[in-house]
Length: 175
Image 1 (cartoon, rainbow, N blue to C red):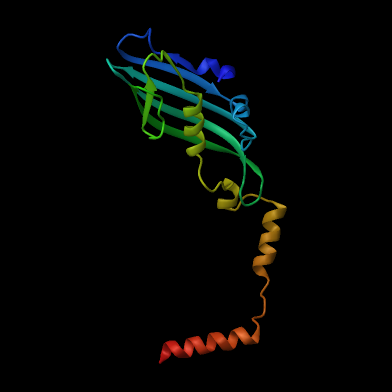
Image 2: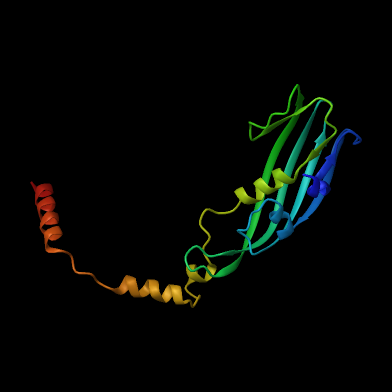
């Protein structure tokens, strides 16, 4: 994580209590992770850190927008994204990040690079299906949508063999 050292939080020198760190995320950040789903991005990330005697409470909050391709039309559009990720950091004999809510750092660790956690929070906050708002409200004019409408309007004739099978199934349900 040498290239992303601005995401290092040195918690050893911090006083007990709450601390706030802010980051501006753009496509350069995602290029480091070789993630090219976003054509453009502008995301604000706030990391609230509460230092206690033997543990750290981290809360990641993201808010911004990314430009992505629509899953239906492949037209680019701006999608609002927001995320929230709470993490508890404890100290132990060896590093362990198996649990998604608990991170164990080895004793003697003095800083934490939060870039991977920010990346995961943003990517996981994306909806599984990205649909252009113009598709949902019917205002988008696209060649792809016109083609889909053409296919939808075509009435294909049912093969007579399938019609007979459906008839048998329907008669069976009546009896």
